Each structure stands twice: as C-alpha cells, then as structure tokens.
Length: 453
Image 1 (tube, rainbow, N blue to C red):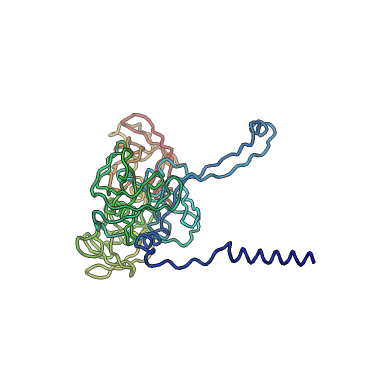
Image 2 (image 1 turned 45 degrees about the vertical axis):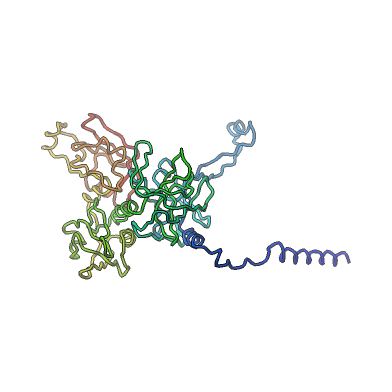
C-alpha cells in the first residue's frame, strides 16, 4: 500500500510540473506587439557577435596553496575566463567579422561568441586606425552563419528610428533604440579626429563598440563607435560609406592567399552614382583581369552569376578565390572569363610588406656606402599609405629607401625567392620576425611583430 501511495504521489507531481511548471504554450504575438522594431531586431540578432579575450586563471583556495604548489607540486585548478571587449558584425557567412579596431587593439587573443553561445577563435586580417575599423577571420570548423544585410549608402533620414545592438558591460544581445540625431559629425579621440560620423541618441555603452546600428528594415547603417562622456544621449557610429571603403580594400583575394587578379593593391572599388554594379579601379597590365578583357572603369554587374549591387557584394564574391579558380564577370558591355593567377615573389612581397626590394649589387653597395661583402635585400620603394591599409604599423615608421633586410622569419640575408616562399602561405594580419639595417639610424632595427598586409 505504501508503494501505491508513493507511485500516486510521484504521478500527481509529474502531472503538476508538466502542466504548471512549464506554463501554457506561448501564444503567437499579436500584430500590435510585432512592431517594426521587434521585426528588425529578430532579423539582425543572428549576425551580431560578442568579442572578447580569454585568459588562464589559476584558482587559489587558501593563503598556503602557492606554498604547497611550489614545494610539493600540489595541483591547482586552472580555468579559462572570457573577458568581454566589445561587439561585432558578421559581414560574410564564410567567417568574416567587422568590429572597431580599438576593441581588439590590445587583446592578446580574440574570441568571438555567436548569438547562440558558440565560441570561435579569430585573428586580425586588417585594420585602419583612421576609421577605427578592423576585419577579423574566424578559425576552425564554422557553423552555419548569417551575414549582415547592408542598407544603401547614404539612405538615411534625420530623425529616423535606429537600433543599437551589442554587448554592453558583457550583457550580450542588448538592444536600445533611438533616432539619427545628426549626420557628418566629428569626434576627437586622443590624437585621432574621426569625421563624417552618424550621431544617435540610442544608448551606446562600453561594450557596444563594434556592434551594429540598424534601421527598421533590419539592415546595417553603421558601426557603433563611441559616446560623448560629458553628455547623455550622444553616441557616434561609423557610416556605411567608410565601411564600404574599408571592405573594398580588404576583400581582395590577394590579402588572403597568393592569388592574383590584377586590381591595384591601393585601389578601391566604388559604386556608380545612379546605376547598379561597381566600377573597376586601375587594372594592372598583363594581369588576369586585363587578359580577360577588363579595364579601368568597367561596370561589373555580376560575378559567377551572382548580382553585384555594391562593393561589399563584389568583395564577398572574390576574397575566397585561389590561384587557378575560374571566374566569370558580367559587365555592362559583355561577359568576361578570367582565370585567377598567382602572385610572383616580387608582387607578394609588395602586397604583404608594402615595400619593394631588390638584390644588393656592387653598384648599390657603393652608392649606399656599404661594405663590399654586405648581404641582404635593399628597400627600393616604400608604398604610400592607402585607405584601409595597415601600412602605418610602427615598424614602417622608421623604414626608408636604401635600408637593408638582414633577416626575415628564420632566414638570414634572404633572397627574393626565399622571402617570397616564406610569404607564400601567409595572409594579411599575420606576424613575422624581421631585422632591418636602418641607414637613417645607422643601426639594425629588430621587429618582433611585423604585421603583414
């Protein structure tokens, strides 16, 4: 009888929890509740990420734990702690994330958390200090990702409702609303004067940086950047025009592999004033694009059958290309078949390092007043900075024509072929060790973290 009572009680409790603890099924929201803001947030959330860094933390249980560990090898508990830094936006479903450069500038490592809680390692591909933008590439096996939809550049109305989504104070997927308060604002942060910014009264707090500013269509109109500390309701976001310029520079296959198409490294793809497609900038002679019959000013409207309406579409279609891949570009004047080429050693060095090098000859040694037995490669040109590049890295600030490459990675006095080979499998954002002889300083300069373009 006791067992019967136990079974009856358990059964009744089970019915209670199933019926009441879970609650009634959630009804579909009414039309009044499903506002444009709610729809836009639902559309945008899958492509908003939280960005942080991980640190190894050693748990110490009492004041004597370290003593016992040092002398008796008592194990201590080590665990990984995620420290939130900011937010970001997935700009390509194959693993590219856009954020502010200041979010990851000092991070020893970068971890990206997706909206479903999945964590992925990431590395920097490229950044631009002047616009405070940074492009990250996710590592490892990627889940299915959703990329952001971009609004049309310049399609903004003063006073229109916008939504800021991000990770303020580590509180992921936080949403705030406001309006576009002003256009073309300037904001001074340290020594950098940011111009042409959007001003909004949507709440932007520490941790929102790098996250999206979204319109009621659920499309990206800007990247949240900063707030004015001495005021309330004054936040700033980077507009699409700067974002497209930045991505136009970095979403080229030359930055991700040794592939070669033929768009000049410092050229930016732009949209025509009133037509669809993008305009090709300078095309290098004898390049794959040139051999395919393409030239500067051609208006590309589709790549491999996919429509192109803006520079982002064009970049998304190109950045994963590898040497030997086939490409079909449709322009306003016809169809062009292109086979992706390979960068030679000289071109790869120029792309990754932003400099041109040549072997030392007896005449150069004499002209540069070097020892007759001096080895290495001489710097013959230092590229000017271009929008979106990382050529302003600290190591380049002391580099001049006539300087000598004494060591690169593990190779002392490398030849052009050896240096090119060491860069063959590299991509932008990676680091290398190098030693230069700086003639202006009359001394070797060691660069432990030379960042590649």
